[in-house]
Image 1 (spheres, one colour):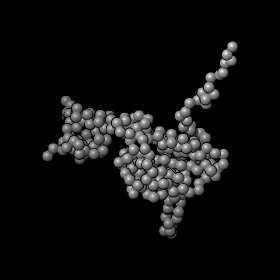
Image 2: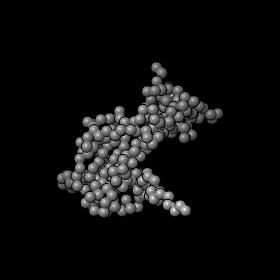
Image 3: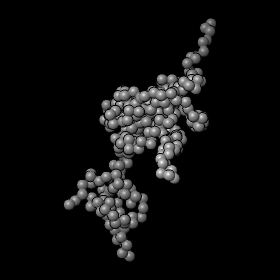
Image 4: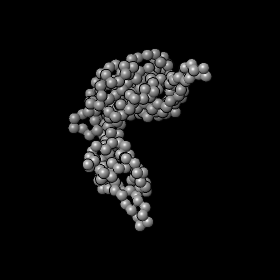
Length: 261
């Protein structure tokens, strides 16, 4: 029975990219069998009897379609990240995008006598939007993390990795998931996070800066007192904060007045 190309999974598409980038040596596993049956791969035999694989025209179309979907998702993700960053700036906060921060995560190890002992492990956290209040009082900084999701698969992947969320919460006193409308609901996200829904603008391209309109709070994020560790302060000092999207302050001074004769 023929295999429906539309039923092939991410594993199949990943293997297809690997064959496209390689010399085409066969693995002879079941993934390869299904790609051959779907018509995305074909077998070739050289004059010496060596068999190789070649991506067919249908396989090239599948790769192109996958590339377009991934590119559209990246554009939508960046558009929503930019929207959240702008909202935080309007709230008077200093904003960073694309930070890489070391975060302590609680773990456990088994001791020599079989006793379970608590340990602290370090994980790399890369929040989509990180912001602090514009203040000189350390206790009033109130760091917030916003993690943006525009695809359901990405959301489910995060929910299966609780350590990732723990790393985010180890860096802030308030943590949010911002979901593109339609990919999930607040009930799916643990209650230690706030949940916000971003509604796309109807008819607007997702790559545009105004692709997302209303931001709906489904559940407020729990707040807890938090003081930034010294290591995070140093990371923020080395990184570039998001520039404010506003006109130059010099432009507000206006044109010089000229005395009329």
